[in-house]
Picture 1 (cartoon, one colour):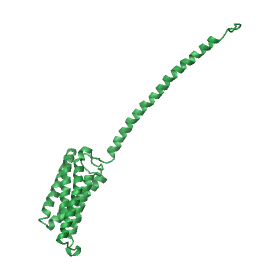
Picture 2 (cartoon, rainbow, N blue to C red):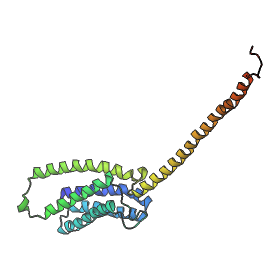
Picture 3 (cartoon, rainbow, N blue to C red):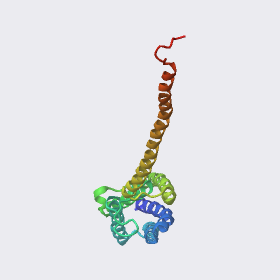
Picture 4 (cartoon, helix red, strand yellow):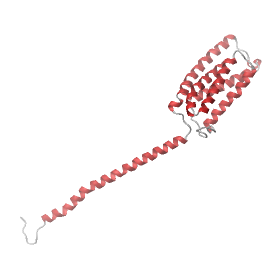
Length: 219
């Protein structure tokens, strides 16, 4: 239960960090992330002093639902909102929070198994497991927070549709530039051919100057 509570707290902190950028993008998404963070943080506070079965049974479906929603949004995109139907890119922050939620579900399912089946750790064993879990969750939470905070600044990818659109615009711009560039060599070629034509026109006149009339002696 301790590891599940720590994982829930870590996931809640990451969701708190993601609220401002999602709110700016779509207020409903910001509200959803805020409610998710409130649930996960509240659950982590209540889980340890009140190890009630109801808390366990409430956290499992909620976190499973969050995992399923994350997978669907990366596969098909959310069905509503400004980017409805556009798959979202997989980021570091959302991946870490999803991994933490999977850890919560795993730990809670483990607690539902009778202790006679999986054994009981000693006091020292629980302490060591708690320390290792805290270090691991801390290492996962810090980059998750940084990634969530940079969600709005770095731009959040929403699938390949926007990339294709931008790529198409780039090609159009490049095509326009190349087209204008192809006109320049032709113009240069025309300009280069003009001096040659003048020389060719002068050549017959020079030849006429060196010609002699019949019977005229050559000096």
